[in-house]
Image (cartoon, rainbow, N blue to C red; front, side, top):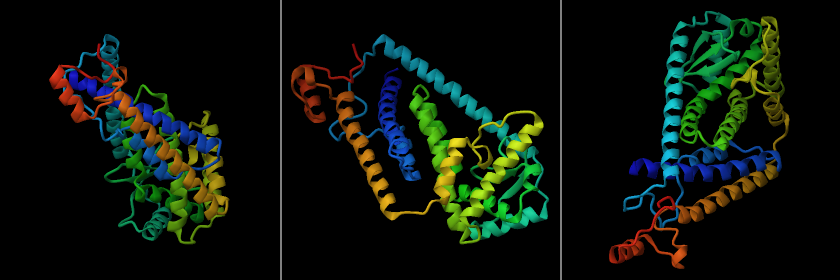
Length: 343
C-alpha cells in the first residue's frame, strides 16, 4: 500500500498541474482565439503524466507513510477504475484487430493508383493497405505497427480523383506524423487520470489539434497537387456523403474521429484554418502567448511540488528544509515530515 499510495499521490499532483494547463489552453483557444499547434497539446499530455518538481524535493519520502482512511479508500477506487478502463481498451483493441482481418481488400484500380501516387509524394516507403470497411467514419487510418486505410466503399467510389487525392494526403499525413500512436498514448494518460474531467476535455482537443496539424502537413506533402480550395471542398464532400448515407440508413450522423464525422465546430475551425492566409506576426504572437502559458504552468508545478512532496510542507514550523537538511534533522530528532496525507 505504501508504494501504491505514493503513486496515487503523484497522479493527483500531475492531474492538478495538467488541469491548470488545460484551462489555460481553453482560454487561449476560445477567448484569445489562438489555435494551439500540436506541440502545445503534446506538452499538455506530458504534464498529465510526468511530474515537474522543484529540485529540492523528492517524489517518494524515505519514511513509512500512514495514510488517512479516506485517502486509502480513494486510492483503491482509483486502482479499480484504472483496471476497468485498461480492460476496456484491451478488449476494444482485440475486437478492432479481428474486425480488420475480416474486412476485404480494396480491389478498385483507380483508388489504388491514386493512393500509390499520394504515398510516393508524401515520402512513405510503400503504399498502405486499403480495406473496405463499415465504420461510422467514411475513411480513416487504423493500426500503429502496420497502419492501414479503411474506407466506406459506397462513399469512396463517388469521390473524384482530385477529392481522393486530398483525402489520401490527409490520411497519409496521419501516418507520417504518428497521430494514431500519439492518440493511443493519450488514451492511457486518460486511464491514469480517469477521475479528472479536464483530462478528457484535453484528450478531445488533442484530436482536433491532430486534425489541424494533419491539414497543414497534407497541403505541404501535396506540393501543389491539391489547392486549399480543393482540400476544403473534399472535406465538405465527405461530410455531405456521410450525412446522406446516414439519412438513407435512417440514423443520425455519429460523432467520430475521422475526416467525415467531425462535429460542426471542429469542421468550422478546420475550414477557417485551411482557407485563411498565414501571418508570421500573428503566429509569432500566438506562439509567445502559448509559451508564457506553458512557463506559468511549469512555475506553478514547481511551487506546488514544494507543498505536496517531501520534505515540504514545513510551514507550521516557520522553516523550510532542503531534502538533505530534512533527513539530517529527522535522524537527529526523530521527526517526520510528510506529504500532507499522513495522520
